[in-house]
Image (cartoon, rainbow over all chains, first blue to last red; front, side, top):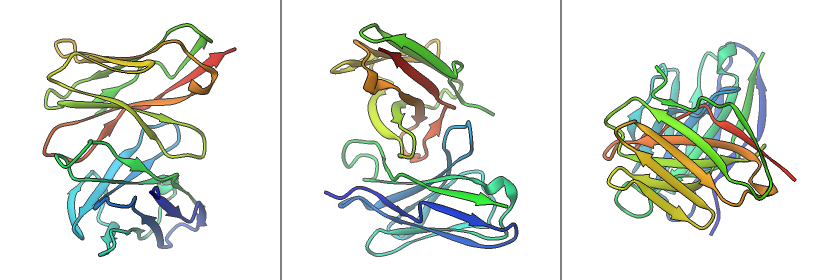
Length: 115
Length: 112
């Protein structure tokens, strides 16, 4: 059983640029969530995808967008990068609530630095 | 608005003793609580959870206690081992909403 894989592991971007982060779900998981963890903080919910549709969104602006593909892999896109977007971005896959043990399997994250 | 709070940023405990990590929440809608453990350069790993219909859940060395009236939960680790040194996050959700709300974490250091 494979876990959650995220790429790249580290990334440096310039303010104003766009970035795409990628995530491969754990086998059998059809729900993907993205979280942003700033330094010294807990992970903050960005959004979740289920069956290729957004299924809940946190308090993040529209320049944060995502996609889920038929194989349940996912992308997080961030446009017009700001310095405050520097953070660890975590992808988590899960079964929908009520379909098994509730709890995410997290990837190791992508460390994004905006300069 | 910090709905889940972990007021102790760090905790040091002697190996073999009990580690107690605390978490408070403010949102009465939360009905499911989880603890995650995080090592550097890794993602959080699920440790143990508890539903609001229970007040205690055990899994080996780990026990989570929930006090709904106080909106407080705690994680007990007995006995503490050096491999337990990590950052521990408390998280909460309510059924029907897939979002997890995390605390800021407590860094636990087990002293050999």
